[in-house]
Image (tube, rainbow, N blue to C red; front, side, top):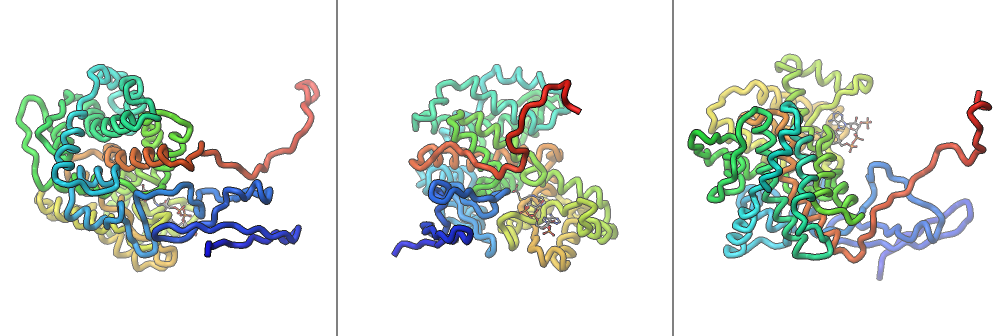
Length: 431
Ligand code: CMC
């Protein structure tokens, strides 16, 4: 028997039957598509805390249990046993590749890593101290002015070429943003290197010396990319879907996603965490900081803590904490003062009634900044790395939306609270 719920309008005494839909796992949803036409009511849900905006087969999160699955595979398994190219293939195409498919996919991506040479000139239009995310928004949006042969979104082949281009070019774009900021020459990608190795090479290599990629750091980089690859219908992904729902081209949609990710409540949190740890400065100042966080008037948040969906430990944070130790070990960093503060902060927060009662746990951004700093990335680059890795998720979600026969332009409604219709008053008669 199909499930439904009954809505009773107490004012009129009328009842309405509303269908309930079930996914493969997770909570059922009430289908409210006919709510307005049947009842004259809209729903009100700022922040979409109770609203499912699409069907998706890509990523599943159980926030209470702290579970994250991509196409059914647990993030811990992917981070431990897979690599970013394989995870990108999985997210984009739905299945893990076999050996032949994996080699071909990695090669196809590699063939798109270079940028149109003229894009280099874009960079010189930015100030040297421009935030890398500002550069990324601009340059990624500008790709639509260069790759005209992958803009027809009704053609699956063009969509796939645009997807490959975006995944392939993002490391080049991000590394160039870094190089520009420090006045070093851009490094062209090297196709013999893996995705993560290539990014490290383009970021930290210089043309006058050979650059040897440290395998432990390349592995950590690859894992960080895996951990950020997709995360269901978060703010930036929803932005990409909403932009794409109007028929906008994929490069413009991903630029919109980058802009949304930049905010400190979302991808910008990794940068904010490091700033916070530096501001705390020493372990003995943690209690004072926690006090400020708990005081609503202060408007201070414990960055890297809390999540809209996870009401348990973010599974990505667990892997990130482990990777953090590996990286610091490899680099011979025995006592990192920021890590010490982070570990102590986490210990105190996890016992504190304020955080416990609100189910606030570390999220993916809590430890990622410490690793990235140890690897040599400046704080401003952290969110750019998040954008680089999330591109595969964004573009997979965008493709899924375009192929969805139920897809419509995204167009929320509102509860209007402004003045009702009133007569226009000429300026000379206004008091
Ligand atoms: N520190 C202190 N209090 C917090 C925090 C925090 N980090 N996060 C939530 N709260 C409190 C908040 O004040 C509220 O308290 P009350 O019910 O008394 O008003 C309650 O917890 C619920 O918070 P909310 O803002 O309604 O929850 P939300 O689901 O809208 O926000 C969040 C989720 C991630 C924006 C928020 O937890 C936050 O601002 N965290 C810090 C920023 C951060 O680390 N963001 C990265 C998220 S993971 C990566 C990503 O998505 O990009």
